[in-house]
Image 1 (cartoon, rainbow, N blue to C red):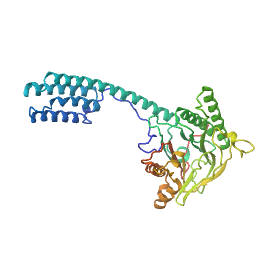
Image 2: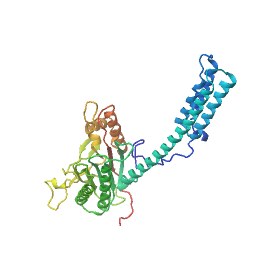
Image 3: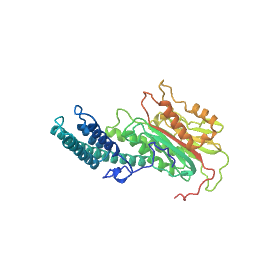
Amino acid sequence: MRRLPGDATTQMRSGRVPDRPLPWLRGRHAVWALPALLLVLIVLGDLWTGRSFRMIAWVVMVPALTAGLAGVGATALFSALSVGAYLLIDWALRPGPETGLPGLLLVAAAGVVSVGASAVRRANERRTAKLSLAADVVRDTVLRPLPYHWGGLDWSAVYVTADHVARVGGDFYDLQPSRYGTRVILGDVQGKGLGAVAASAVLLGTFREAGYHEGRLRDVARRLETRMKRQQAYTRYLGQDEGGERFATAVVLSFDPVEPGTVRRGVAGIEVVTLGHDAPLAVGPDGVRPLRSSGGVPLGMGELACDRPEDGGPRVVRDGLAPGETLLLFTDGVTEARDRDGVFYPLQQDLERALADDPGLARPDRLVRHVRHAVARHIAGTRWEADDLTLLALSPLPVEPQREAFP
């Protein structure tokens, strides 16, 4: 699975915080350097200044600084060193009435408070790490990690949520190989929050089963519509419809099946169903063009469709990818990204300009990287609320790979 570093789709990683978080004891970092340097500077400054300006009481800053950088052990150590430095300077080397016992009590109290603050900080970090791990698990449950060349496709994806704490939102995508060809979905559930996450999860589960078992793409889309209606009824009975029923826009594709080992020549046939969603873009050396759109209504609003075929289900159209073309699917987090003047990001025009300068940009990994960075530049410094952003680029492999037999 190709993912961009630093985005919300990085592979699930352990968020566990070590119980003994003292990297300086392991020799890997030097978090002790700043508090140690501060302690030395305060001691030397006190020795250098006259009695009219005593600095030794400033050592209260040393344990406070350590508490923000290191663990409880390091904070306790520098608290003790601060008390020791105060005793050495104020009572042994430069005794006088300027500081004395009140200053000593202040330094000792600062050390105790700093140790407590460090303990609270570490506990909060461990709690945050557990929540982060849970968010990673939820994300990878909803958006399962996919293998390289899954379904005979060279593919790359970027998934960036507006809520960087939750790490999962209402956007969704997946690929499902089947004996009827590789099925693809990308969509966006209306709204935000856990309700949108739940809706995207149930739609993906339905897609994985229907995309594998159903022979016709129309039946896959019909199953998705039924599942969205069931989800609407479920949330309505729970009283969680939030004043209106959620819907989801989506584009569902089916690449024509190819026998394993077949060398691809000519156009790769694709069936397309657009359900209130922008049609994908075919990006290649000859330019950028949108695929045909079936003009369907969003999932959960099927009763509003007026051009439904006689056998039910949404309309399906056919299109294809020429050799060298890459298919780019995207959510409205891309096309509705606005700059400071409220101008939307011109996706197709930007890609046409970029391809004129670099035809190699049509590769899936380079394509999603370019769009992701272009959107980030476009919205930099804006006041507009950010939205989830999802990109999925697909290109059929030159030779259909071998795979396990479908049951």
